[in-house]
Length: 96
Image (cartoon, rainbow, N blue to C red):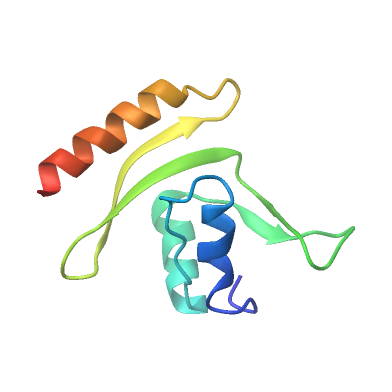
């Protein structure tokens, strides 16, 4: 959410894996991504510090020109970690 500090998305991503990177998005960028990738999010009605969101993992690549490319969407129930790792490894090899 744009109301968070710029450092929070990266800290949140790193809580899952220290190699993950979180990106701060402006309100305009966030609205663009939710339409482009069909992502759902809203502020929680129970806790104003929380958000409700789509229950998928999105693999997104940022091109050198700044464009974001959706590479894959993974369901989280069940989460296929091996497939995600394989796809990330393949993406890293492609960008070298």
